[in-house]
Every structure is written in C-alpha cells, then in structure tokens.
Image 1 (tube, rainbow, N blue to C red):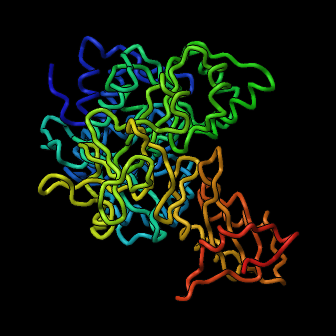
Image 2: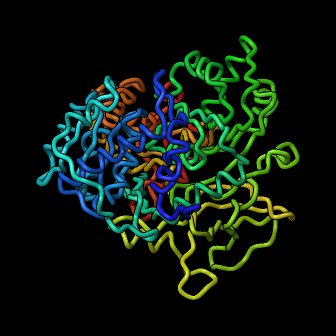
Image 3: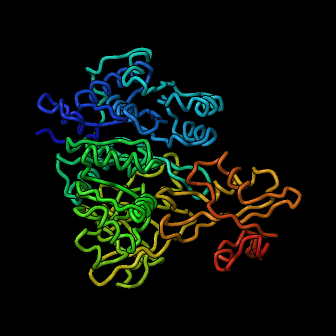
Amino acid sequence: MKVQRLLHDLLLERANPGEQDRIALIVGGQTFTYGQLLAQAERLAGILRASGVERGDRVALLLENSWAAAVSIFGALLAGAVFVLIHPQTKAEKLAFILGDSGARALIADGRLEETYRDALARLALPPHLIQADDSSPGGWLASAEGSQSLDASPGVIPLDLAAIIYTSGSTGTPKGVMQTHQSMVFAVGSLIEYLRLTRDARILCVLPLSFDYGLYQLLMAVALGARLVLEHSFTFLGQTLEAVRREQITVFPGVPTLFATLIDAHRRSPLCLPTVTRLTNTAAALPPEFVPSLREIFPNALIYAMYGLTECKRVSYLEPELLEAKPGSVGKAIPGTEVYLLSADGNPVPPGTPGILHVRGPHVMAGYWNRPDLSAHMLKPGKLPGERVLCTHDLFRSDAEGFLYFVGRTDDIIKTRGEKVSPVEIENALHRIPGVHAAAVVGVPDPVLGAAIRAYIVADPAAALTARAIRAGSAALLEPHMVPSQVVFCTQLPRSPNGKVDKRALLDKTLQSSAASNECD
C-alpha cells in the first residue's frame, strides 16, 4: 500500500478503481462517490493552475458546508496550493484582511455571498482571481469556470510543505493564520481515527462549519477511512438534523455543548432515541457532567468522548469514554503519538493538583502563525530536545495523581465561546463604531454551555438612549454571530489600572447588575 504522505493522498487512495464507487458524501439529499470527488477536484486543480496558482500559493475558500467546499479543499491541494478556509459569515472588512494577509492568489466563493466578497475585493489593491461556486447544479460551476490545465506534472509538494492556513482570532484584534503542514494534518487524522476507534463503515454527521477545524477533520477522517460523511449546512433546524441521523443511520455524532443542550431540551419535551450512533464527541467547551445522563438516554449505544484541543495543534487530549463518570470534568490524556506536560510560569514542572501551563509535543503542532514571527515565538517554545519547539497553550490545567488533565482557566485575553476563539479587542473595536458608544470593554464570563459568554460593558452617551438590544443589533451588523455579546451592562465609567488601561480583572471581580439596578462599574 502506498504511504499517505500528503493530505490529498487520502483521497487518491480512496478513489482507486476498487473503491471509486463508494459513497463519499451526502449533501442536501444528493449522493456523491469518491470517484466523483476526485474527478471534480482534479478539474478544479487544473482551473486553478491555468489561473496562475503555483506550488505554495494560497487559495481562499469562502463557502458554506457544501459539495463545492469538499471539492475545493482537495482541488486546492491537488494544484499544490495551500487552502485557507474562511467562515462564510465573515464580514467584508475581516475578509479583506484575511485575503490580503494570506496573499491569496485565488478566491473560491459561494455565489450567495457575493455582496460580501465583492465588497472585500474592492478594498484590495491586488484582488485574487475569483471563482464563483454554485451548488444549485453540483459541478456546473466548474464547467463554467475559465480555463483548465493538465495535471500530468506533479507540483512537487512534500510533507513539510503547508497544506492549510486556518485563521483564528488574536489578542491584538486581527486574525492570525495557523500554519499546518501536510505532515501535521495527516498525522492528526490518523491519531483521531485511532483513539475514536473508527472503521470504514462509519457514517459521520457534520453540522459544524468546515471552516471550524472540528468540522474540517470530520471530512478528512471520512476520506482517510473511505467512510461516508453526511454534510449538513448547520444545526439551525433540529428536526432536519434528527431526520438525517435516522435516515442515514449515522454512527458518529460530533457536537459542542450548545448543540447538546438543544438536544437535551428537546428530549425533555419529547423523549428522543438515536440508537445507531456509536460515537459521540464533544470539544470546544467542557462537556457539563450533568449532560451525561441525558445524553446516554438519547444515544444509548454511544461511546461519549470528552476532548480538548486548539487550532494550533488540532487536538491535545481525550478521555477514554469508559472513564467519563470516573473522571468527571477531565479532558483525559494526550492523543496517540503525542505528549503533554504542565510547567509553572518560570518553566518548572508542577506536581499533581497544582495548576500549570499546558505544553504540547507532537507532529501535529503548527509550523507557526503566517507572517507573525512575534506571535509564533510567543506560542512555540524550546522543548526537551535540541532545536525542538513545543506548543505553549497558555492555558492553565491541573493533573491528578494518574495524569488526567483538568482545565483551570486561560492566561491570555482570548475568549473561547461556542467552540470559537474570539478576540475581545475585535469586538471592542466594533462596539466603538456604534453611534453613541463612548467606551467599551469586553470580557468572557463562565457559562456551562458556551464555555464562556461574551459580556460587553458600555459607557454610552445618555442622549443616544442606547439599549442592550441596540448594542447587539449594531454588533451583529459588524461581527460574525458568535462574536455578538450575549450580555450587555451599561456603566458610567470603566475601572482603570494605574497605567490607564481598562482593568478587566476589576470588572470580573465585581458583582455587576444591569443598568436597571446600577449604572456604575467603578
């Protein structure tokens, strides 16, 4: 068997003559085979090359969960390019930044998002070549795209080359691009499959956006196995999701606490039972222990996995499902083929029970942040071996006597909500653009379902008569949905430290009421 060194080798192996007729994806009720996926990905790769895309060039993907998205990921790889996944709800200003920062040579965009990407492209001095995707006729958009080129000549990609840049929020307010190589992503796929105990008979449901690496790896795992992926646009309509689980006899159900909370609420109103599911996975925020009994009722035959990860290395740890009740609140131990350890702020090992900063060793660790050597140095630290760099997560954990990990808190300013990393600075910048807002500060507050809820403290012009609803509406016009504050507190002024900066610790330390009860934060 050929060694799978490159990420697109996963597809080339699955689309061999003996397996090309296996079902790869089911999207919107339409079924696609591995042979069709490879054929259309090769067609797109030829179009990208004809447009000037060369080895190492970046191809940005602004696409909803769709057949076009799956084709585009592998098409970019087959062209020798690096794919840059962008959340389809990204606003024009942020989209323009990502396109410019990544130096994207091409943009493949959903035609339904034309207003956004046209606005973004108009902001760039050198806009990328545009290919508009339209899933109303799967594959039709490739036939209408200009040009093509033979794929006879290999672009010469090796495992150390970049496969993807995944943008995530940064503490400075501008997104930062996590660089992952073919080698790191192929390794991560194999490690995930191993500890989840998956086989080629798996039927994986994906309601998570492919732009979220948790969603992306559902596709990659399915292709690596030759399994079947049922790709849904979102979890917006519960009934539609439940219908897909039953109709397609789903065996793998990846989710986040907000999704499971919705399921549990529905289960309490009218009992649910999804017996075909044998794997239930949770990440993005801790799985509340009180969810487990209800989840066992809904998924009576499922192994339930609590996990922890971050984009900079995909996945860090997992808890064996047999230990879920024995180790409540734990995210387990390092995934296969990797190592984790805890260090104090001065770099010394900490004993069990003492909080320490989590460090990660393994082939899955990112190559760094695109164009940001300063931020890369902040996250990648000297390791145990000469010349080695390990990932410093800047997250505080403690371990028990058996080495099982428990999340304690974050040491940086990033808020992790709904499975997404959110920069308070980015939200604050948007809030300051709302007429009538004099000052704003954003913090994350613990939430059992979201992981953290976004709370905005607002100093407003009294004449503006702003309300919490107006603040959220103004935010929604400027930010992606998961970044819109769920809590708004009006204040007369914000507490400040001796150096003049907003003292967010003071905000969190006080028990603050809404403006109906109090209008002061100092």
